Length: 146
Image (cartoon, rainbow, N blue to C red; front, side, top):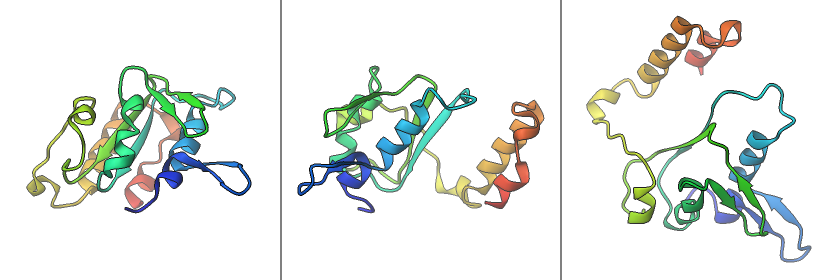
């Protein structure tokens, strides 16, 4: 595991009883903040790495039609339809059938990924530039450089 459940969703400090957000709860708060200006048309939360049996089960309420992130402190963050969640995993060995049924699957043969993620990012960026979706805000060179 790269991060613990507390680091992922947030945790209550047992000594001070103070809540601290985790990575996902922090990102969710940022994306649903109504004061954000201007609100984007679409946001993606991307998870990259192996699936952990415990934290993926806690994602079930986010992945179903309710799209509700339930935190340990009792708070619930409603995820709007403009936010999509994507998992890039090698396998689904520890994911339950309930979790798998909530996700759409795309399988790619390793042969098509010989160039790593670069060909996919370049194709995406080329299409964005061609369609002029973001006008002058899109930085094609910066995406490819990253």
